[in-house]
Image (cartoon, rainbow, N blue to C red; front, side):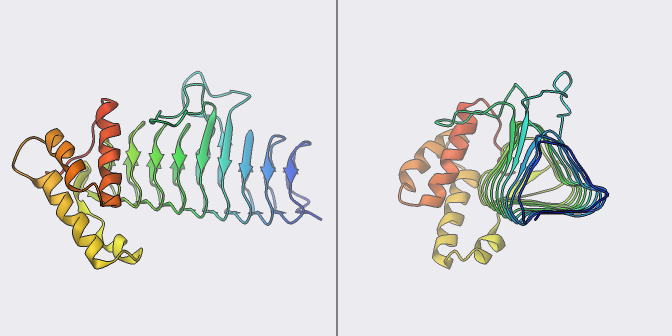
Length: 275
């Protein structure tokens, strides 16, 4: 039987798995769906149409599923927040539902409206914030006070350092690392490292790649490609990107970066380039 503390307030209609735990003074809305073995520690607030996947732990003060901080769209009855499995959501984290404006469109992917997605196995440290219409991948770490604006996409395995801020509509590539205090206002390629008060592309996240188990020869190959694409002296950046598609067509990681860059350029967006 579901373990619901007597001081918790659960609205009629909420769907709560029998193995979930709802702690003291929690609030759970009628539209909530709480999965197996989910733990809501004391004073957690679940609003609106929020789904929380199995084995997720939510710490005190978190407010999940609130209306977006998007003027005129604060109270959309069909808006949703979908959180995946095995996430750790620490104190005072906020995650907001979507809006009718929807997510950032990508080629071959129909953007959804009214929903914010958070993947599996993430860690969202104290006071971090996921805004409306975001898509956050799996194994993402958002460190204390890191914030992402509306419509942001964060790739699998990315790490956002403490107090960093990502501008609305930006994309953060897979396994990229954003340093603490960095302000990000352009798309960040996969496997990159960004640091500085006004975030700049400093190179590749080599430590992260090694920790992820990539072979030394793979890391050397992607490093050589990075130097050609971002540091090369011949041609301009766009031309080097096109040439690199042929030069590195057999390297999946480089091609992932090039496809990411192409999407940014085709969408008339700015991609962060090296100094």
